[in-house]
Image (cartoon, rainbow, N blue to C red; front, side, top):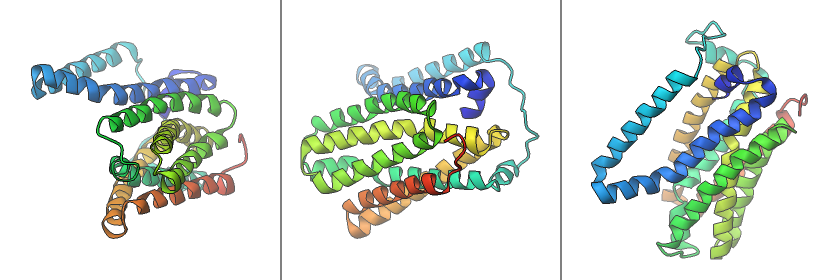
Amino acid sequence: SAAMAMRLVPMRLMPRAMSIILTGVSVASVCAAPIGAYVGDIWGWRASFKVAAIVSAVALLVQLVTIPPLPPIEVRRFRSPLDVAKNPAMKVAVLVVLLVASGHFASFAYIRAFLESVPALDKKSIPLVFLAFGTAGVFGNLAGAFLTKHSLKAVAALPPLLIAVAAVSLLTMGASALTSAIAVAVWGFAFGAVPVGLQTWMVLRAAPKQAESAGVLMVIAFQVAIAAGTTFGGLLVDHTGIASVFLYSAVATFLAVLTVFLLGQNRNS
């Protein structure tokens, strides 16, 4: 999305464009599940898939009509993402992505189990906490775009720092239902800012002349981190208990913060 955004708008509007794109993702994530459940309850589960197919077709049609042709600006090869990965600044950015995404996804699947077992929230309260998580993520996108205008380094470091604080809060004060709910909402706010911050940081700072390859590399790093984080999180829960995944999330995201400040480039910070 960063590579496309910088082709569609002037560079000074890049943060706002990224925020609009990713806010759409967050709003869809918040709304899709309850809408799908509502449609399924009324017309059956197959209707949900039919509605999703229709909406997807409309989205594709809108893209075909509104987005101008965007021929590649790079000579792309299969090895292009590997070539851009040789850039020292890109290596730092990829490391940050791996730490943040693995730290988030190691624990995310177990937040519900944590809320059920530690603060012992009931089944009616837990969906509201996740609604707060998703809603906060929308505002996190907007905050990430605002912060990008002022400091690329801050927008890359502050979201993982907030995730680390939220994870530590769950570990140390998670028995309180209110504290747990606030920590999860803060987590959602922080993770909502992660795509805006990291994509903008990678494209504008690490590889501004290789945006398309940098975007591909970020997607690869994100997917690897999701797989590694969820696998490692499952192993931790199986062998050491649910608290250990939140400890890992806190450590991984805090290491990401240190990486940004200690290894990130100083220019345009």
